[in-house]
Image (cartoon, rainbow, N blue to C red; front, side, top):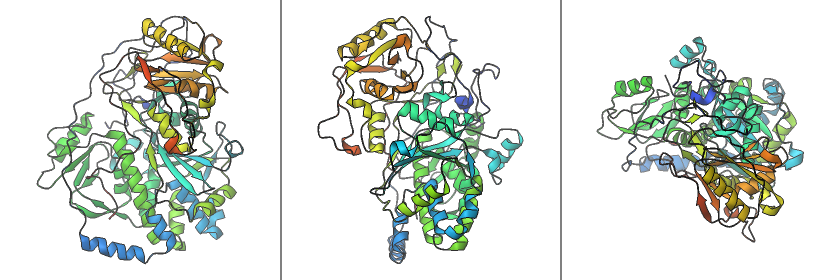
Length: 586
């Protein structure tokens, strides 16, 4: 069974209450109810941390680039294109912007297509009258198996009732009309956060879609402090349909590839044709093997590992990428660039192609009810001629937990944790300015510290250090024990996000914010986890910091660390270059 259909390693009846009907490992399972901090330790069911099978990544050898003559012909073709098409060939444009641009391109036919878009009520979005003209649009890729007709394993899963309601892709597109600046931020789908499910329940962030796209938007706003103005949800079928509407696309493959999860199979190197189903297999690849010249592909062994759910086999005949969801995000970003290039070559001005593409997207598109036709057309006009060549493509840094994760005794499988200060720095780069809460003085914020790992001595040290930084510490004997390994949560009440951001800036490690009810009447409660460092001096924004990402960092000196988990990886970077074996534009 594929890893994004697995519902936990334990007994099916031993699922957390509130488990959804999702298709994703612990992803679909809600955490136990009663997440509010209680005044006594609750002993969780214990489970042995199981290390993942070791994965050989290796370093890729050098790869030959496409032939010089081919590059020359390609440059000549590029030179003949219109200015708009030249811009779009460099685009990191997401499908959401693609939709509004295309609809704007066929305005006369747009009203009919607009009515094909599904709109759902949203109650947790931030209106643009609060954020101003700059917009953050959440792009959600739904794992709906029943939306894909040409993939055999999806058809079988759909018939078996595995419809898939989790989010395989979680991206935020930031559009700044004043200077036509665009930034894209991805959040890894296995990121374990509070508020993923209704009621503040902890889970992987992709499980939020079980409760609807509005809940996913709420979780991002509460946990990361990123305001979301609109959301757009697409399903697996949309990727396949768009590529099919174009008549397929071409991508250059430096190496032969096979993916143990999506069944992507590329048997030859060079510029290869992909139909809609193959394109979907590419953007879903998370367990990728690559094969250099002279290596023999052992596909039966790889398939057997996929069926067993281990995905890695030393008998593959090649090398295992091992980057999981982070590698998949990189491939999705590259695929979007290639897709935009192909559309620029064949569409945008060709009414037949434009209509076919819009027809492939609109019927499977779900947006929030406040995302009106007028606003879509305004975005189309504002960004139609934008220069997307230097648009940053960021991924929220995470710490990978190399052991099976248990939260309050329930098995959530493979998870990754948010990490500070890397996440705050990346979000500041995405937003173009540091968090507003950094302007607050610690003396204006009351903080209670709660034991989350049954480590009272370490918890007391955290409280003492925060007090030394100037925060007003509210004594409490409350506990929130979830297990020996847990992330730290900076819990705040509605309306106190800025206070939480200020406290967050004084912490490092696997730390995340979450909305809830703080303990002992404090403004903020720190539920101390198992990998936490407290700064030795207050965080501050450097003087003269411009409202750009480059200077939007905080200055802290780490001092007190609770524990260091040997199963935790170093924080991942916000940007990752395309590996030499990954596909790219021809």
